Amino acid sequence: MSKFLNAKYQSLKAYVPGEQPQDQKYIKLNTNESPYPPSPRVIEAASKEAVERLRLYGDPECRVLREKLAALYGVGIENVYTANGSDDILNFSFMCFGANGAVFSDITYGFYQVFADLYGIEATIIPLKEDFSIDYKKYLGLNKFIVIANPNAPTGLALSLGEIEEIVQTNPESVVLIDEAYVDFGAESAVELTKKYANLLVTMTFSKSRSLAGARLGFCIGNEELIKDLNLIKYSTNPYNVNSLTQLLGIAALEDNAVYMANCQKIIETREYVISELKKLGFEVTDSKTNFIFAKTNAMSGEKIYQELKKRGILVRHLSGERIKDYNRITIGTAEEMAVFLAKIREIIEVK
Ligand code: PMP
Image 1 (cartoon, rainbow, N blue to C red):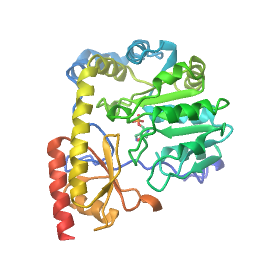
Image 2 (tube, rainbow, N blue to C red):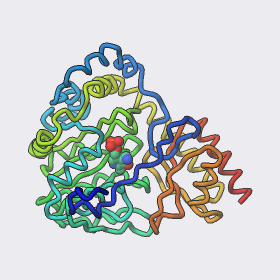
Image 3 (cartoon, protein in one colour):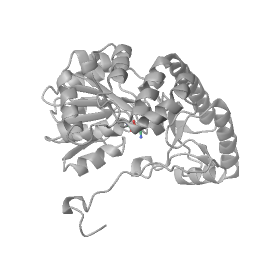
């Protein structure tokens, strides 16, 4: 740290992303990317012409991309905002809507606490229940900025739409942000509710179900006034927040939406198979509605399982929080990758 750093950032604890090894040595099941490549239209869109056009600035409004998203989700273009990954939207949302304090659970996406710290926002932390489900009744009538990952990470568990609606309805004086990064893997989306409630913002991403984590493309849907607020910050910081190549790839991905939804279905099937196999081996596994599973065994510590898998060429995510240190979060790869994963797990558990 230099002596020049603004004093208010000196104690900031930054988010630590999962390992991104730059060699191809590992079966990578640690950061919830899709195991499937981008669709044919996306590969085609990454053309020589598109790269040559990088000479120019892209469309700061991302108009075509937003039109496509609006059509897909049945909302108006004025209800859609696009950004450099959904992290970018979370960042701006804390900045815009967090003044009266933020509320999120003790076990959830680690970035929420970082954003709260970054903006000096007081965070009210609501513990998950013993079984890791969200105690949604504790979120009623708080009138603070509420952030819920649905499905939640790293637990994979989802709230029902009825529960979400009650939270949104009973907090009319504050924004409720539902982070739907993983919604395409089996949870109910709250997008329809954005038409009814002016205080609901739903964020989504192309990083998980649409195989574009590296392109950095996130979006959110909400009331026009909320979208204007996000644009105010965007045009006060970085108007060209989605580069022109990524815009083209996003448009092409939406044209191939059926390909991605079929991939999600494959991932769901693989997930259910892996869960049943792990349970046969004595693992406890949560009822995931995401492209990852959250699992522990009494036979070995979570950290040891992580290390033993890594030695055998498989990367998973071990998080060190007190309540979850026995668990690992394991991204669902292809059926072939998961067969290797299960074989290695059997080897590790038997050897001990
Ligand atoms: N929300 C949740 C719950 C996540 O797990 C992630 C991925 N780390 C994100 C948001 C951010 O995803 P991205 O910025 O790639 O859209």
